[in-house]
Length: 607
Image (tube, rainbow, N blue to C red; front, side, top):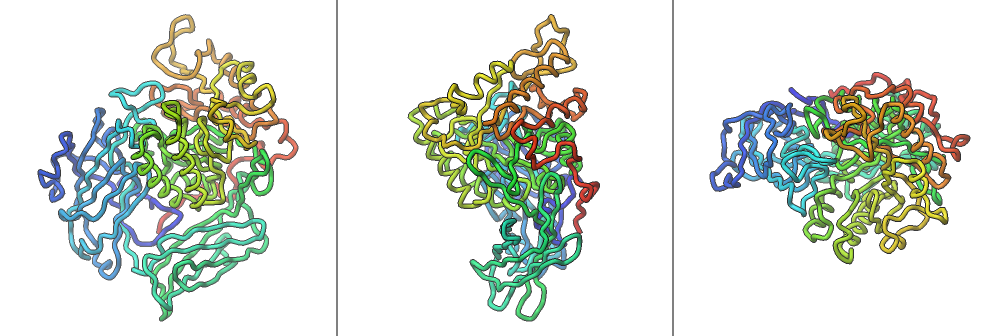
């Protein structure tokens, strides 16, 4: 069974049933499936391997043209022992619009290609019974009201647009639970007062039930408390001698939640974890655990040659983080894709700093329908992932070029709405309204500058008065308020070891600027660009483009298959450099192994 690990490691229950594997499918190019009664299907003629999209090799389909509608089917067997509980059908992600049917009955509808969702199917199934599960997918990649990220709007991939992703691309699973079970729990860590506050939500509440929370350090109980279940209840636990989470020591406290009824019976048990850490802004600097932080990030788009958006294995997710650490980075800007929770789990375990971002491209901010599609999905993303200590910045949008089309009113409204919504859902992290341009309201000032010569980068990075780069001063000047300054994309140097000799034109790969004539020129250009970024006292961090090649875009530190293109010791020496202003006050020791010994070789094993 592919991708058989538990999909939600920060909120784990003992009982669950993975539905990945062989399903049947049918494309519906004319979108006549509803008329043909396909919700009542007992199976289709062709097979697909879930959770891999039909465009991918691992799906067994590899269909490369546009798929605006398709149908999935599989039989599901409900265990006998689930007879007295709610039964949820969960989807990690389905791109873009999903309608789900059990035995021909619609049990739910969802919009959003990167957010997780689930439906209570208890009224439609019987314990011990077998049922027909059908999923109808609509995915209009070229619809300007639908976010699609880096999926190509043309038949072929080109420049920085790649293979499309249709339908189910993350795990599907069944999970039983008591009607008074814990729905979710917001975890707020406070290092200044040595405490953690828990804000629980329940599916249903009943008078007399209570929630018990136990906090463990290396399997040893260090704190516990109880609160009655109900809307608005909370619980705070004090911690003696707290151990903070950081790239130097990615320590995670274990959490046990138990919902206990009035008779003392445990009706729901969930295991989780948290990292005790703080990220905040003072003036134009970013602080981690009250120490100034310089972010040496790499752009990670999360594409795979055989799975496209879906990693072939859980180890592949962990391996990508290790590759980044081995190259000298302390984190990543997750770019134009909502990464699955398993990736964030490994980032938490390995002390890896990440910026979380939506797949916003394709969604025209000048179209009102875009606001509804985007904001509803973005809220689900933030709520799902806000407990991960590795996430230190939210980025709803990336390079909103459509700002230029009119007076920018609708563009600014949706960016401001996304900024305000994100802060209401999570007030503990900075919000970067759009990476690059054009800013409307933001906590960070991020710019993208792909100059290939150090002198040009130096000239464009700072204005004559020493202030930040403004893509369009007329529009953006009002949004700049001395925020921390991040060079959120730079470099992108094209290099393919298989390129033809230097005196011939290279046409089969894509990147930024001209290709270096030889590998020594590559190293020289790379180090000179990084040195420019490090020399500025204004800069609070950078993000280099990019971790791996992606299809025709060949400007990665690694090849698309994750093999090394360069002398990685030499690459690491370049990216481990610290800025002048932080060399004596660094919160992160670049000479230290980035994975703490206490977390090495720790595999997550669901019960």
